Length: 490
Image (cartoon, rainbow, N blue to C red; front, top):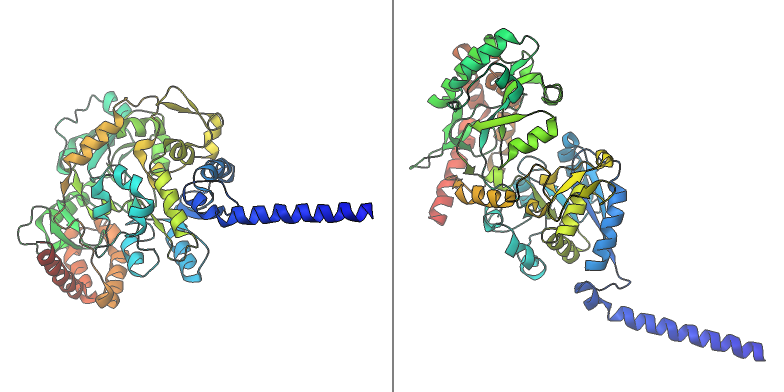
């Protein structure tokens, strides 16, 4: 009998314990919302772009300990390699693959197009409720410039806002031949320097480029690297075929001259990347997009000095504003918690640096309160910083000045808005023609832009091919939408 009583007492004690736990769980929702640690912790699945890293799961375990404590959520990161990302994410969205947060941009899993298709959750209500801190932190131009049809569908990375092109130089070769870059700005001004390198350095590619190279002209493209564009100083807002402009015709003629002179690689139009050249140092100049103190970053990355000089003004475009965005999946099970995470990621330096650089003492070490240094293990967790949130929370590298982020803010404040900033073309009425236009682009664009094709004998033919594919109809539709957008936005 005594044994039975003990058993009953034990059962009663267990029932009371369970009741207490259940009542605690019943009140845990508000604890979770305020960051309390209840039993209703959720797992957030985050898809992002970049070469999958060996230590990503190891780092996310540490991230999850931190986020569990802060917002009662853990994080699983799934990385998809650069070239595979757009297609893989298209499949994931179509199949309803479980995910909460995903990287998107103007060039990687197209932000505007997929927002319109319903892949991303509209954030107009979630942002002020769960993202107030990040709204106070991020440059407001990013949030306004990334709206699609008046709504926010993602959180842009707080980084450089304008797009500015520069000519980059391998400083070792500049110094070797005592070459002056103080008057370099235009494409034509490069010729004497290219000639010197070609004549004296047979193993060096004088002008490095891949198939994505496009000569800079002072226009903004309605769709990146398709022929329709608008002049940056436009007063009439008339779209033009970029191939018919005097600036592009002159640039293509110069490119063809450089190609014939051997300054450009014979394989430029089919080359996927110039990484081999930057690794070996066997290049003299190329063109890149810059940011403040970029020369330091490039030099540290390549292991030899790189210097640059402007090739364009600093212009704020849709491409630059939409260059790195994190969206919440329309199918997310936990949209509020996903927004809480994005809020924390963009405002909390501990979390932001862990996601970016890994585990302190394993992948990097702190040099002082604001500077860090990579350790040998960082090779197992080498992430693309630009794609992971607010860059201005990141620790500085050893060669960065203390005012680095102030320089970014100054650079951003001085950028000039493109005349079509926040105009997003909806191509659904001309989707057939746009596909045909893109097919023509695939055939001829890279060869024309790299100078491989002579514009004197090929340009008119390529323009005709674009028109036959329906470019004029696409441009008429874009012009109609642009006129309406301009009237609406005055």
